[in-house]
Image (cartoon, rainbow, N blue to C red):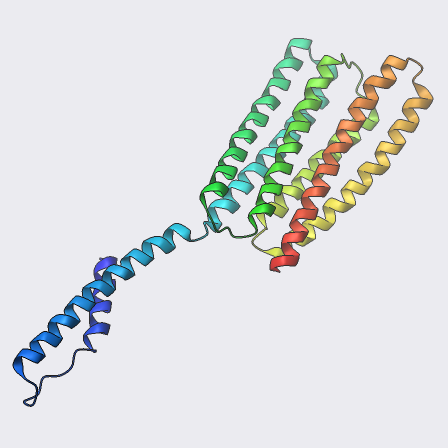
Length: 263
């Protein structure tokens, strides 16, 4: 029905160009003019249809890109929540159950890889994007980095045979959940640039808290832990936890860059 309406409008618009017949016009000349107009009409309609197909192919798939980035950021948030659940229950569960919970985080990391691959594939297929393609690529890479860090962290608890979850680790994990919540909200609000900017400010504040916590953690670690092996173990855990916040800060930098370009 829509195609019929479009063609009808095209015919009507072009038909106005056909000269009116009058007695002074030679019949053969008038017939030739009408046939020529019909031919031009057919060519014009064909061109219009072809150009619409081309424009449909070139048109930015804004909704698609925003939705895929939102799907990836939500997956990161789920990973952070799974990490908190993992750490909260860690001292009270057996090694086999610890491995099972770590495996659940690994599955989310693999799902994130699949989403990232879809985004990159879509970037390669489309010449035009809702924002700079390089910014989309940076965002998807950084979101993937956060998911990788969370997965690596869960794995390190088991590989390093961590048995005691200290206060600093608990605070770090709480910060990881909060900052990934803000990351997810900023990505969801990417189309509403002003709202995304507010979430970026919160990300920077949380990242600053994580830096301060990292300094405090290392200070206490070197002061209270006498076993050098324990110092090495927990330092690696603290460093990974801080890296999550640093990557989230980098995400906020990319989003702020998008706001500056398109706001």
